[in-house]
Length: 352
Picture 1 (cartoon, rainbow, N blue to C red):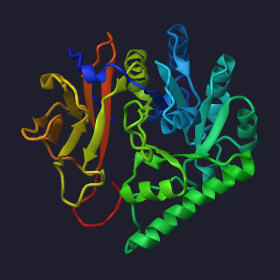
Picture 2: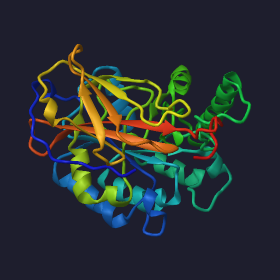
Picture 3: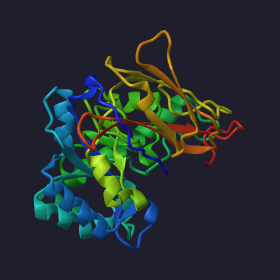
Picture 4: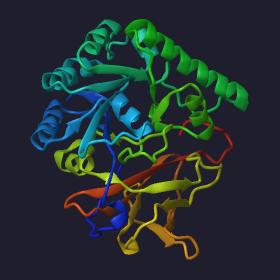
């Protein structure tokens, strides 16, 4: 998803301290796979070299989540690696590069593709080998479904039962093959809504989306942010900005549901920031990389801003990125929110 990032100049006192961690999201590590979901081995090596040369702390994702849940302080410049879909290039390219440095990483597995022995995927034996050398394997659903989409004439109860079966199937297959029960879950395509968030919380899982921004203690534990790494967004200059980012202290975002009502094309996102001294002119928000948005600060609620695109959002997935500079040179506070837009014909989840 394209985005635009501008340099800003602000030091709000409420943001000076941060207990946070940047989670990176990958898919393929190859020059021959689709660029939209790939980093090249050369790009990945440059990223790892930067982290090593600049004293970053690479943590296992489970440890990051446990620290957030139990209010254990995270180190400054904390980074964690996550990889979706269990593609073969994880084993052939990412695994050797990360294990050479002794760095942990997490793979979110959609188990059906592995069970079907698709050529592009790792096999369970390769994953068992990796599990002995710093890799963790977590739940990405069994069939990699668009989980927010209901089948035609499918009621809410049957929809949720179907999704739960898919998640539980993946859970069981990973336990059977790897021997460890997943505690983390990554939403396929980054798509979720409150009913699905409630479902995975009830299953005892911590959820991860594909919206950008660092993790911090007040983040939504059923839809935690990650920075997608692919195509031009994996280039080193942007990578450096992302791994050095800090959380924008958003304590609530409304509406809670990122799935828009039918025929809603210009949604308003309302953010409540933690109390602090903010220079309102220096908060910048972009929708799909465009600055054609209205930003209106509330006149009767402190530190509340309303963000509305000045153009219609078409069916599909959209991202709103908001940034604000920190008191540390080159480091910016970051928050991201996704919108999922349906077609106007009333079909719940016809193809986007």
